[in-house]
Length: 351
Image 1 (cartoon, rainbow, N blue to C red):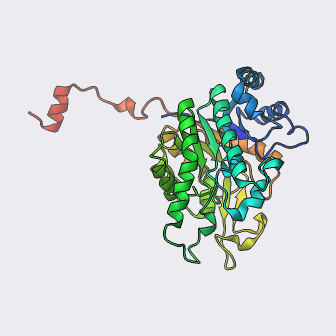
Image 2: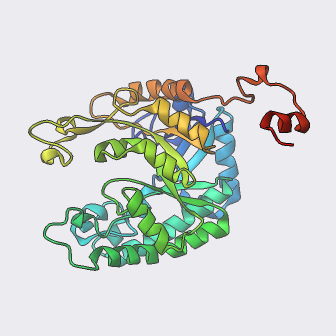
């Protein structure tokens, strides 16, 4: 068994134009004071990280790692969710997703997708230079608007969407293989890879690519009413990243899973600060320890009620308390009897 590493902090929800969230060095100082041991860096946020420079220049990566090490921090992983989202955008979301791309590419879906692919490849190269094994991402979505089968989905629609999704991702996965980096797809509503079955559909179409892995975030399973502990039992060989994020699902006589188009505070399913929701984290940490999860426990703070300063402070301590320092002995070894093979045969009645 392995002891999980942590706590790490995903910076996507914390970076800002105001101090101390405006530079990587300032954020590193702040995170270290909160008790974090590593940072999970969003590769798309140029205020914190220049992914193209990192992909090309080893000194840039060495300097970044050195600056963090001076503060007792490491880079746990890079994330590339914004780039991944742009790999597959249904036309219904074109305008909304345009904001993720440079201004010159807005209104040009094909050029936007090509740019996203180059940025994903740069992220993989940067991860390799930083000595990382895992990159988090989104799959993007072509079929999501058809998640509910009415009007009736025509035969072949979902299959064609997943065929195309795998076609777009296969070259990126191949490059990940060349670099020794895993692409960890976050199982997430709004993405075509949103549960175990959809992950399997994609995995099969990539030829069971060895670099196709999972970022596990139980909050999205609560909102889908999916059994996240069973998911770990089934898919633990694929889980390489773990977001510690909480959620609650409290259906009423007026709304349920779909939320009635309400704001986050008014939805039946809400993201909550870690420890304030319904996720059974002791069981999750136990299962990940049992299955030799090799990676980090990274706080992803999203809460519709609590402020992020308190969320980070409490989240770092929450992760520390839940990490299991795995046993190096069996608890009942004190009662073990030393017996020979002859005695074992006698115990079993073997002549």
